[in-house]
Image (tube, helix red, strand yellow):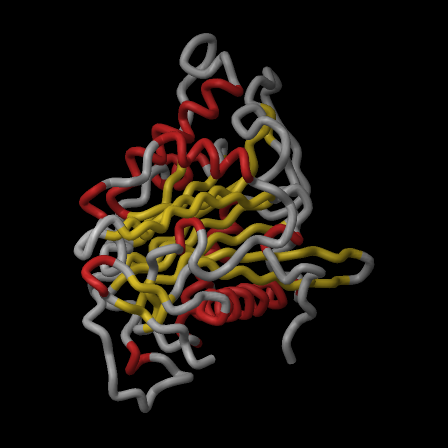
Amino acid sequence: MTLPKGEKNCITDVNGVQVGHVTLYKHLNDKETICTGVTAILPHTENLFRKKVFAASSVINGFGKTAGLVQIEELGVLESPIMLTNTLSVGAVMQGALTYMLDETEEIGDTTGTINVVVGECNDGYLNSIRLQAIKPEHAIAAIQNATNKKSAEGAVGAGTGMQCLGYKGGIGTSSRVIAAEKENYTLGALVVSNFGRREQALFAADSKENPDTPDGSIMMILATDAPFTDRQLKRLAKRCAIGLGRTGSTIDNGSGDIAIAFSTAAKIDHHSSEVTSSFTMIRDDHPIMNQFFQAVAEVIEEAVYRSLQQAETTIGRGGRKLEKAPI
Protein backbone atom coordinates (compact mmCIF):
# COMPACT_ATOMS: atom_id res chain seq x y z
CA MET A 1 0.00 0.00 0.00
CA THR A 2 1.42 3.37 -1.01
CA LEU A 3 1.58 6.31 1.35
CA PRO A 4 -0.63 9.40 0.81
CA LYS A 5 0.78 12.15 -1.37
CA GLY A 6 1.28 15.74 -0.26
CA GLU A 7 -1.08 18.48 -1.40
CA LYS A 8 1.08 19.50 -4.40
CA ASN A 9 2.92 16.18 -4.71
CA CYS A 10 6.07 18.29 -4.72
CA ILE A 11 9.16 18.88 -2.59
CA THR A 12 7.67 22.27 -1.71
CA ASP A 13 4.99 20.46 0.33
CA VAL A 14 7.68 20.57 3.02
CA ASN A 15 6.94 23.87 4.72
CA GLY A 16 9.48 26.59 3.88
CA VAL A 17 11.15 24.77 0.99
CA GLN A 18 11.36 26.77 -2.24
CA VAL A 19 12.41 25.84 -5.78
CA GLY A 20 13.51 28.11 -8.62
CA HIS A 21 14.61 27.48 -12.22
CA VAL A 22 16.38 29.24 -15.06
CA THR A 23 16.00 27.58 -18.47
CA LEU A 24 18.21 28.24 -21.51
CA TYR A 25 17.11 26.78 -24.87
CA LYS A 26 18.24 28.28 -28.16
CA HIS A 27 19.37 26.86 -31.52
CA LEU A 28 22.48 28.84 -32.48
CA ASN A 29 23.11 27.18 -35.85
CA ASP A 30 22.95 23.75 -37.51
CA LYS A 31 25.54 22.34 -35.10
CA GLU A 32 25.21 24.20 -31.82
CA THR A 33 22.26 24.37 -29.43
CA ILE A 34 22.08 25.80 -25.92
CA CYS A 35 19.86 23.37 -24.02
CA THR A 36 20.61 23.64 -20.32
CA GLY A 37 19.74 25.48 -17.11
CA VAL A 38 19.96 25.91 -13.36
CA THR A 39 17.71 24.80 -10.50
CA ALA A 40 17.91 26.11 -6.93
CA ILE A 41 16.43 24.46 -3.83
CA LEU A 42 16.19 26.60 -0.70
CA PRO A 43 15.54 24.76 2.59
CA HIS A 44 13.76 27.71 4.23
CA THR A 45 13.01 31.41 3.81
CA GLU A 46 15.49 32.79 6.37
CA ASN A 47 19.20 33.39 5.89
CA LEU A 48 20.58 29.95 5.09
CA PHE A 49 24.07 30.61 6.46
CA ARG A 50 22.90 32.04 9.77
CA LYS A 51 20.23 29.36 10.20
CA LYS A 52 21.69 26.06 9.06
CA VAL A 53 19.77 22.78 8.81
CA PHE A 54 20.82 19.19 9.39
CA ALA A 55 21.84 17.46 6.16
CA ALA A 56 23.56 14.37 4.80
CA SER A 57 24.53 12.86 1.48
CA SER A 58 24.93 9.42 -0.02
CA VAL A 59 27.19 8.78 -3.01
CA ILE A 60 25.69 5.67 -4.57
CA ASN A 61 28.05 5.86 -7.53
CA GLY A 62 30.67 8.58 -7.58
CA PHE A 63 31.09 9.38 -11.28
CA GLY A 64 30.24 13.04 -10.67
CA LYS A 65 31.60 16.51 -10.03
CA THR A 66 29.34 17.65 -7.22
CA ALA A 67 30.76 20.41 -4.97
CA GLY A 68 30.27 20.82 -1.24
CA LEU A 69 29.62 17.25 -0.10
CA VAL A 70 32.86 16.94 1.88
CA GLN A 71 31.79 19.50 4.47
CA ILE A 72 28.25 18.12 4.64
CA GLU A 73 29.79 14.73 5.36
CA GLU A 74 32.02 16.18 8.08
CA LEU A 75 29.69 18.63 9.84
CA GLY A 76 26.23 17.36 8.93
CA VAL A 77 24.72 20.74 8.08
CA LEU A 78 23.60 22.65 5.00
CA GLU A 79 24.24 26.41 4.88
CA SER A 80 23.50 27.35 1.26
CA PRO A 81 20.91 26.67 -1.42
CA ILE A 82 21.32 23.33 -3.19
CA MET A 83 22.17 24.25 -6.78
CA LEU A 84 21.76 21.89 -9.75
CA THR A 85 23.14 22.33 -13.28
CA ASN A 86 25.21 20.65 -16.01
CA THR A 87 28.66 19.14 -15.43
CA LEU A 88 30.80 21.89 -16.94
CA SER A 89 28.85 24.68 -15.23
CA VAL A 90 29.48 23.71 -11.60
CA GLY A 91 32.07 26.48 -11.25
CA ALA A 92 29.85 29.22 -12.69
CA VAL A 93 26.88 28.17 -10.58
CA MET A 94 29.01 27.94 -7.46
CA GLN A 95 30.29 31.47 -8.15
CA GLY A 96 26.76 32.79 -8.62
CA ALA A 97 25.41 31.16 -5.47
CA LEU A 98 28.44 32.39 -3.53
CA THR A 99 27.88 35.95 -4.76
CA TYR A 100 24.24 35.78 -3.72
CA MET A 101 25.11 34.52 -0.24
CA LEU A 102 27.87 37.12 0.23
CA ASP A 103 25.41 39.87 -0.69
CA GLU A 104 22.92 38.47 1.82
CA THR A 105 25.42 37.85 4.61
CA GLU A 106 28.06 40.51 5.20
CA GLU A 107 29.94 38.60 7.90
CA ILE A 108 30.97 35.67 5.66
CA GLY A 109 34.74 35.79 5.15
CA ASP A 110 35.06 38.81 7.43
CA THR A 111 34.00 38.44 11.05
CA THR A 112 33.23 34.73 10.63
CA GLY A 113 34.34 31.84 8.43
CA THR A 114 33.69 31.03 4.79
CA ILE A 115 30.66 29.25 3.35
CA ASN A 116 30.13 25.79 1.89
CA VAL A 117 28.14 26.15 -1.35
CA VAL A 118 26.58 22.90 -2.62
CA VAL A 119 26.27 22.27 -6.37
CA GLY A 120 25.13 19.04 -8.00
CA GLU A 121 25.41 18.19 -11.69
CA CYS A 122 24.48 15.88 -14.52
CA ASN A 123 25.96 15.78 -18.02
CA ASP A 124 23.50 17.23 -20.57
CA GLY A 125 26.08 17.14 -23.39
CA TYR A 126 24.01 14.80 -25.58
CA LEU A 127 21.59 17.65 -26.38
CA ASN A 128 23.41 20.69 -25.05
CA SER A 129 26.50 22.27 -26.59
CA ILE A 130 28.14 21.91 -23.21
CA ARG A 131 31.58 23.14 -24.35
CA LEU A 132 30.12 26.62 -24.90
CA GLN A 133 29.57 26.95 -21.13
CA ALA A 134 26.42 29.01 -21.60
CA ILE A 135 25.59 29.06 -17.87
CA LYS A 136 26.91 32.17 -16.14
CA PRO A 137 26.92 33.16 -12.44
CA GLU A 138 23.95 35.46 -13.00
CA HIS A 139 21.82 32.48 -14.03
CA ALA A 140 22.45 30.87 -10.65
CA ILE A 141 21.50 34.10 -8.87
CA ALA A 142 18.31 34.34 -10.95
CA ALA A 143 17.35 30.74 -10.11
CA ILE A 144 17.66 31.53 -6.39
CA GLN A 145 15.67 34.73 -6.78
CA ASN A 146 12.99 32.87 -8.78
CA ALA A 147 12.48 30.30 -6.01
CA THR A 148 8.93 29.96 -4.65
CA ASN A 149 6.95 27.51 -2.54
CA LYS A 150 4.56 26.82 -5.42
CA LYS A 151 4.56 23.48 -7.22
CA SER A 152 7.80 23.19 -9.15
CA ALA A 153 7.78 23.01 -12.93
CA GLU A 154 8.88 19.58 -14.18
CA GLY A 155 10.38 17.98 -17.25
CA ALA A 156 12.66 19.97 -19.56
CA VAL A 157 13.11 22.94 -17.24
CA GLY A 158 15.99 24.39 -15.23
CA ALA A 159 18.81 21.91 -14.67
CA GLY A 160 16.71 19.28 -16.45
CA THR A 161 16.43 21.14 -19.75
CA GLY A 162 18.96 19.03 -21.65
CA MET A 163 18.85 15.78 -19.70
CA GLN A 164 17.96 12.28 -20.92
CA CYS A 165 16.52 9.40 -18.96
CA LEU A 166 16.33 5.75 -20.00
CA GLY A 167 16.81 6.77 -23.63
CA TYR A 168 13.99 9.32 -23.55
CA LYS A 169 13.72 12.99 -22.62
CA GLY A 170 14.29 13.34 -18.90
CA GLY A 171 14.72 16.29 -16.58
CA ILE A 172 13.18 17.63 -13.37
CA GLY A 173 10.70 15.51 -11.42
CA THR A 174 9.27 15.90 -7.94
CA SER A 175 6.98 14.07 -5.53
CA SER A 176 5.98 13.97 -1.85
CA ARG A 177 4.45 11.72 0.78
CA VAL A 178 2.78 12.27 4.15
CA ILE A 179 3.85 10.06 7.06
CA ALA A 180 1.64 9.83 10.14
CA ALA A 181 2.39 8.46 13.61
CA GLU A 182 0.20 8.94 16.66
CA LYS A 183 -0.62 12.70 16.68
CA GLU A 184 2.19 13.75 14.34
CA ASN A 185 2.10 14.24 10.57
CA TYR A 186 5.34 14.69 8.65
CA THR A 187 6.08 15.35 4.98
CA LEU A 188 8.89 13.93 2.85
CA GLY A 189 9.52 15.43 -0.57
CA ALA A 190 11.94 14.68 -3.39
CA LEU A 191 13.24 16.48 -6.44
CA VAL A 192 15.40 14.72 -9.03
CA VAL A 193 17.36 15.63 -12.13
CA SER A 194 17.05 12.41 -14.15
CA ASN A 195 19.81 11.72 -16.66
CA PHE A 196 20.56 8.02 -16.50
CA GLY A 197 20.03 4.66 -18.14
CA ARG A 198 19.44 3.10 -21.52
CA ARG A 199 16.13 2.43 -23.21
CA GLU A 200 16.39 -1.34 -22.79
CA GLN A 201 16.56 -0.80 -19.02
CA ALA A 202 13.24 1.08 -18.89
CA LEU A 203 10.68 -1.18 -17.24
CA PHE A 204 7.86 0.62 -19.09
CA ALA A 205 9.49 0.13 -22.54
CA ALA A 206 11.67 -2.94 -22.26
CA ASP A 207 10.71 -4.21 -25.73
CA SER A 208 11.85 -1.06 -27.53
CA LYS A 209 14.30 -1.80 -30.35
CA GLU A 210 15.47 1.78 -30.82
CA ASN A 211 18.08 3.06 -28.43
CA PRO A 212 19.83 6.42 -28.89
CA ASP A 213 23.56 6.40 -28.24
CA THR A 214 23.32 8.32 -24.97
CA PRO A 215 26.05 8.17 -22.29
CA ASP A 216 25.60 6.42 -18.94
CA GLY A 217 24.45 9.70 -17.41
CA SER A 218 23.70 10.57 -13.79
CA ILE A 219 20.95 11.48 -11.35
CA MET A 220 20.79 14.02 -8.55
CA MET A 221 18.24 13.15 -5.87
CA ILE A 222 17.27 15.73 -3.25
CA LEU A 223 15.19 14.79 -0.19
CA ALA A 224 13.54 17.31 2.12
CA THR A 225 11.52 16.63 5.26
CA ASP A 226 10.05 18.49 8.22
CA ALA A 227 10.61 15.48 10.48
CA PRO A 228 13.19 15.96 13.27
CA PHE A 229 16.11 13.90 12.01
CA THR A 230 19.81 14.18 12.77
CA ASP A 231 22.38 14.13 9.99
CA ARG A 232 23.06 10.46 10.76
CA GLN A 233 19.38 9.62 10.26
CA LEU A 234 19.21 11.71 7.10
CA LYS A 235 22.06 9.65 5.68
CA ARG A 236 19.98 6.56 6.32
CA LEU A 237 17.19 8.13 4.26
CA ALA A 238 19.59 9.21 1.50
CA LYS A 239 20.88 5.65 1.14
CA ARG A 240 17.34 4.42 0.44
CA CYS A 241 17.18 6.57 -2.70
CA ALA A 242 18.90 3.66 -4.44
CA ILE A 243 15.78 1.56 -3.87
CA GLY A 244 13.49 3.99 -5.66
CA LEU A 245 16.04 4.39 -8.43
CA GLY A 246 16.24 0.63 -8.92
CA ARG A 247 12.46 0.42 -9.26
CA THR A 248 12.69 2.41 -12.50
CA GLY A 249 15.11 -0.03 -14.11
CA SER A 250 18.44 1.64 -13.34
CA THR A 251 21.38 -0.63 -12.63
CA ILE A 252 23.60 2.34 -11.67
CA ASP A 253 26.03 2.13 -14.57
CA ASN A 254 29.80 2.60 -14.34
CA GLY A 255 29.75 6.12 -15.78
CA SER A 256 26.74 7.30 -13.80
CA GLY A 257 26.92 9.76 -10.92
CA ASP A 258 24.08 8.73 -8.60
CA ILE A 259 24.07 11.11 -5.65
CA ALA A 260 21.50 11.87 -2.94
CA ILE A 261 21.34 14.84 -0.58
CA ALA A 262 18.84 14.92 2.30
CA PHE A 263 17.98 17.71 4.72
CA SER A 264 15.51 18.39 7.52
CA THR A 265 13.83 21.72 8.22
CA ALA A 266 12.76 20.74 11.73
CA ALA A 267 15.68 22.43 13.49
CA LYS A 268 17.59 25.57 12.55
CA ILE A 269 21.12 25.77 13.92
CA ASP A 270 22.23 29.30 14.77
CA HIS A 271 25.66 30.03 13.29
CA HIS A 272 26.36 32.78 15.81
CA SER A 273 25.38 30.97 19.01
CA SER A 274 27.97 31.07 21.81
CA GLU A 275 26.33 28.27 23.79
CA VAL A 276 28.44 25.24 24.63
CA THR A 277 25.58 22.82 23.94
CA SER A 278 22.45 22.63 21.82
CA SER A 279 19.36 20.51 22.33
CA PHE A 280 17.31 18.96 19.53
CA THR A 281 14.37 16.60 19.31
CA MET A 282 14.84 13.51 17.15
CA ILE A 283 12.70 10.61 16.02
CA ARG A 284 13.68 7.31 17.59
CA ASP A 285 15.37 4.95 15.16
CA ASP A 286 13.48 1.96 16.56
CA HIS A 287 10.03 3.54 16.19
CA PRO A 288 7.89 1.98 13.41
CA ILE A 289 7.64 5.39 11.72
CA MET A 290 11.21 4.95 10.46
CA ASN A 291 10.10 2.16 8.17
CA GLN A 292 7.37 4.42 6.81
CA PHE A 293 10.02 6.99 5.98
CA PHE A 294 12.15 4.37 4.24
CA GLN A 295 9.10 3.36 2.20
CA ALA A 296 8.36 7.01 1.45
CA VAL A 297 11.89 7.56 0.11
CA ALA A 298 11.53 4.68 -2.34
CA GLU A 299 8.13 5.93 -3.45
CA VAL A 300 9.03 9.59 -3.98
CA ILE A 301 12.23 8.82 -5.89
CA GLU A 302 10.50 6.35 -8.18
CA GLU A 303 7.60 8.70 -8.84
CA ALA A 304 9.85 11.75 -9.27
CA VAL A 305 11.82 9.92 -11.97
CA TYR A 306 8.63 8.93 -13.78
CA ARG A 307 7.25 12.46 -13.48
CA SER A 308 10.44 13.82 -15.01
CA LEU A 309 9.68 11.64 -18.02
CA GLN A 310 5.93 12.29 -18.10
CA GLN A 311 6.30 16.06 -17.98
CA ALA A 312 9.13 16.35 -20.52
CA GLU A 313 8.47 16.93 -24.21
CA THR A 314 10.36 15.71 -27.27
CA THR A 315 13.42 17.95 -27.55
CA ILE A 316 15.87 18.62 -30.40
CA GLY A 317 19.40 19.55 -29.40
CA ARG A 318 22.83 20.05 -30.88
CA GLY A 319 23.54 18.59 -34.32
CA GLY A 320 19.84 17.77 -34.74
CA ARG A 321 19.91 15.12 -32.02
CA LYS A 322 16.45 14.31 -30.72
CA LEU A 323 15.16 12.77 -27.52
CA GLU A 324 11.56 11.67 -27.60
CA LYS A 325 8.92 11.99 -24.92
CA ALA A 326 8.65 8.69 -23.05
CA PRO A 327 5.57 6.51 -23.73
CA ILE A 328 4.54 6.54 -20.10
